[in-house]
Length: 239
Image (cartoon, rainbow, N blue to C red; front, side, top):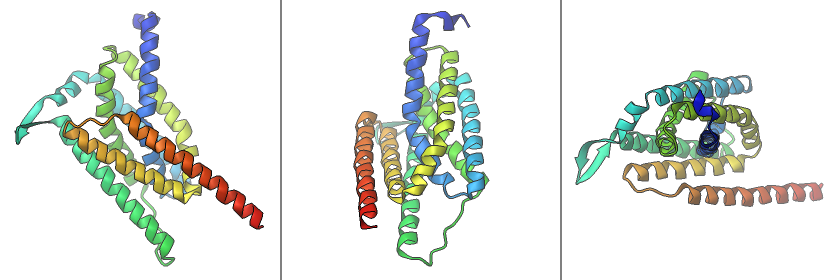
């Protein structure tokens, strides 16, 4: 624990924690979307169980960091393009994210245009599994990024625990906000499609700076927030 007494370790810890929180934004959005399909009594349980198991899994990955780094080693080549274990995971994860989000948007549009469409509720176990699977996908990316900042596994574990506790605190509020505003749910799903496409590009070694994507999402969120305020004000005036 002597490493925690060093000033540079605190700087690394703060940087890692901030990194984990930023990289967890898309995770929180996905969790909010999938848990909102559950009965109200099970939503909080799904978030807590899913994030707790995801945290334990991510800590396990950190303890086996040497094995995780080996995922960057090429397994085979296709058309002179080296393919590693990480590339396969990112490609499958991106495909899953795009497919899942597209299906959810389609179901959302059908429920809005056809009143006869019955809203399907998800299962608790299925939702938890989806949360864990998505966290596994993003874990490889965040862990490999963290390795470039520090070699101290204890700092990485502390950062992961802090970030996931923050996610547990705010996931419920974000879920409630998205559920009350259907247009924001569509925006969130569109964001997840964008993240899925980005993951697929990364699997082909085409890195897209995440700052551009987060800025686009932030800008879209600001515009939609303004629209919500205008619609609310218009409704009040009509009354």
